[in-house]
Image (tube, rainbow, N blue to C red):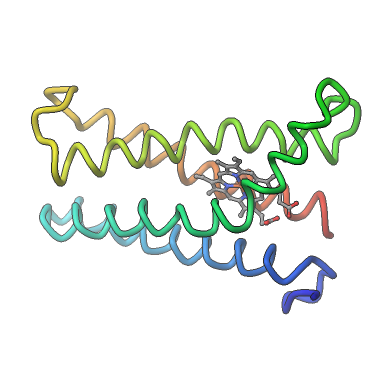
Length: 143
Ligand code: HEM
């Protein structure tokens, strides 16, 4: 079934893209809350963002990435395979770090680091960059 963005992409790819843009917008809202020193709301919102992001990743990306991984070295032959493959690796790191950060901030205060500001900044930056990268993947595959 084709999607609703008129790119000819599968429906699931359009849902994945739009849901991550929406979560990205909410994450920017969460960052604004932190700037306004509304820390408890910021913390909760970022937890929702990070945990909900697992849904499009698991349902829209992991299956396709495993297919690419099965190509072995051949994955590096074509732009259309190497770019989504490498995006999966870096996106996995970003999502893993983001998940660690929200768990650390909401439920496991004793986990390292003791001063977590840099962790929050790095994980948020990498995570937002992954949305940009994922949008690039979408444009590469379906534009
Ligand atoms: C912060 C984490 C991530 C973000 C924000 C993100 C974002 C996106 C977006 C917006 C797309 C375009 C929509 C689409 O084509 O389905 C995409 C595609 C893709 N992502 Fe991610 N992604 C993340 C993590 C991952 C992970 C962990 C994997 C692999 C395990 C992965 C593998 C893929 C693949 C293979 C595609 C192409 C899917 C297709 O053929 O349509 N991504 N990603």
